[in-house]
Image (tube, rainbow, N blue to C red; front, side):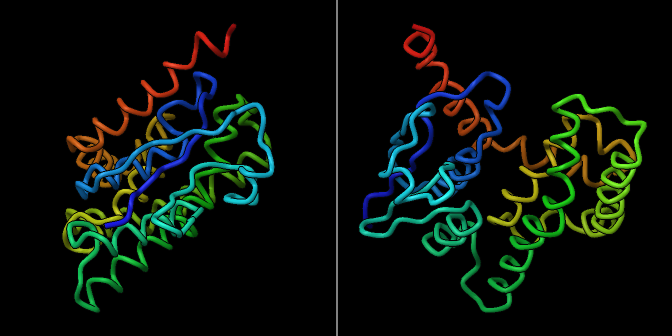
Length: 217
């Protein structure tokens, strides 16, 4: 197996720690038991080498030998192809997993991201703009709730689709946005209760904390 390297920032402010999207890749790698190393790029100085791997100046990206992959959905699908623990090998199972990967990113995160950013920024919630954002997310959760009430995991066994969906929903849950969606909330609790989640989360927090003294200096 080629050397897997996850690249993230060397440091980020305290608030987004635990949520920077290299976390999704860390979690996947830990669940799959794939050996990997972590590299970093400067948070404050995104140069040409960074943009060569990630054209939007974001993180993460994954290198696998001579492959360089950006976007967490693409990375997780690639890693799923390296581990049957997270991506079934049969066509039906692979199809189920893949469609829920895209549903997490397109149908749910598209609605949850503006909602979560508004909460994070402390925007007022008595405006027409907020009502639109809030109603959009509630509609998505209304349709997702019966799906998660009827199954433990999205595509049968735990998969990369669950890593993405749970990571999207845990942000909403952190702002009490799942109070009327008990199946979604229970699903997040199941996923985040896994040992690989705890390991990945602790590793990301330690990675950024280790650079605090240097960055503040």
